[in-house]
Image (cartoon, rainbow, N blue to C red):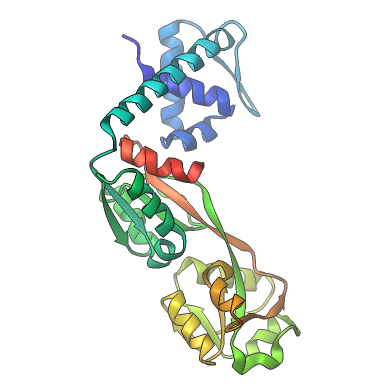
Length: 295
């Protein structure tokens, strides 16, 4: 009997030219991809790929011969799935989405509204927590998809997808520090200001401290906060200088309530990425939701 998943893996590896990239796209482990290719090669009785140092290359007498037929077959099947989805009128079931409150507010909310309009029969559960807790929920099958502040260490049981949004950390101040607007500052100069930073063990704080250590500077916060909205409020009220992603303070910066300090060198860009449980079979609703970010 034909195992369509083996051909789907074959097609993805051929298109990506890499086991690693194929595993990321399919949301399965690299060993699982490699095993699927070996199984298909055994089933067909011929090698399909040359294992090259730079990646995977189709064999002339195996992979190249079948690639076109496999591609056409998979596209036909995708068309069948689309037609059935249209017949159903909507995806159903439950979609459990995990992220921090800030990621929900500034990044995910418009996509969730758009998804609900397209698939109103899907029940959406929003799980608001910090990235380590979301990772644990993904690993224990209590969450279908998570959105995490990156970078994070590789975790067993989850697959990290591509970044969905870049975050540019900047130092901001309010009118109480207006005299410093546009004046060039160094990281060392920041020590003269009362600093408002996120709590320890957050990705944002760890990223800032790593960057400062590299440049031989230690920044000590006057106040530690646990939310970006609270930090913006305190900075606006003149309590000190905050470090926040520009994307989370756009409105206040545009309205002049806050301004960016001219600090050199600039902080490195971070990102928000999507994660899914490793080896889990995604539902139609989950595939539809994650596809919104790929498009």
